[in-house]
Length: 100
View 1 (cartoon, rainbow, N blue to C red):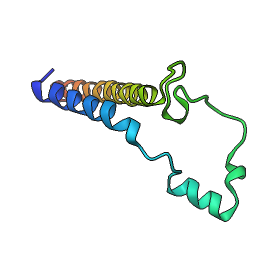
View 2 (view 1 turned 180 degrees about the horizontal axis):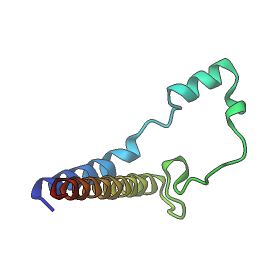
View 3 (view 1 turned 180 degrees about the vertical axis):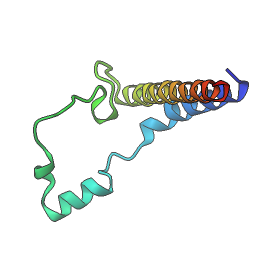
View 4 (view 1 turned 135 degrees about the horizontal axis):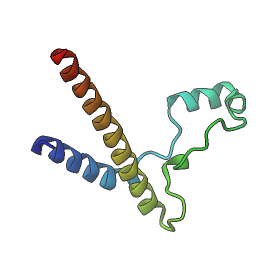
């Protein structure tokens, strides 16, 4: 893996770990509009897929700040692995197409 990728990953992990606990506890724009217009309950219902880290707080950790930071780091790692894997697959496919 190239050095630039590692630098970017480390920077993203530091940002996620340090800044995640300072995220706004207020609802996002869509949730706020749903509350204001009175249809927030219509969006609630049976879960199709259970969130692994609900509300961006890692279950089982006592400190909310640490739990949020850990959730941010975990999300960053999962996103990186997925993006890196997809990138490698695309790269291999292009290499195979250029040979054939």
